[in-house]
Length: 287
Image 1 (cartoon, rainbow, N blue to C red):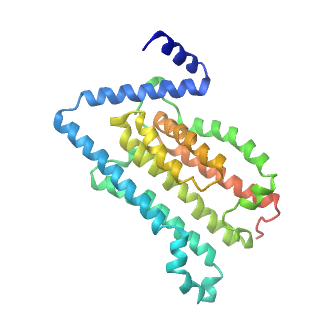
Image 2 (image 1 turned 90 degrees about the horizontal axis):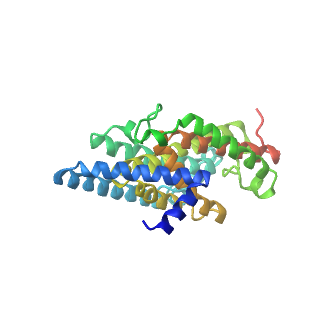
Image 3 (image 1 turned 90 degrees about the vertical axis):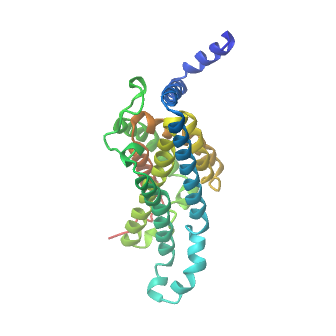
């Protein structure tokens, strides 16, 4: 690296968050290089096959999630039957969200986990360890619970301010009849919030932890691309923000050895958004 290039990198390192990310990514790359250097030719070939398998299976589940795991498919296949039954029709929209939630739990969570178990791998090595695991160097290791609280403290004030806007109040909850009864609200929140466990596991667990050992920091960018694509139909700021959120949450997952900071952050923020939007618009359900 020439002197000018080194100077640019050192300047970037002085920016607090960016400096930490660059340091962490270099650490991931160094570990991956050391790991690849220990592999025999047969082990190298096996590792490449494992990565290909994870990417292929991941692509299949992502595709199935959009083709048969979304609400339009439910309406097309099950909608007419639901409409013929008054008791079911009363919960028609909620049932479509129930189908959507179950599809996410299966396609993003249970089926990828089964794939790993069939391979004889331990799920705790894919970010599910509550205690975290020492998968990175000591100097970039972070406690996941503390990082969750720090990020939450920074995001909640912004959510609270946004809750005063009409656009925010009209957008959340996604299930428009959540205010109809306490049953509707609770069932919706359980279904909605549970999907974040599956989403975080798929992108930050199955894909990221599955690739990081061999690819290093490149695994962050590989897992970030499909994570960004599932947000492309959202408002532009959220879609663009998902690129940086994917990299940040992925880095934190590796530095903490656990994806639970991201899971709890998503759940806390999503629940807060629904509660604040319902409260500000006077739509909180009564007992």
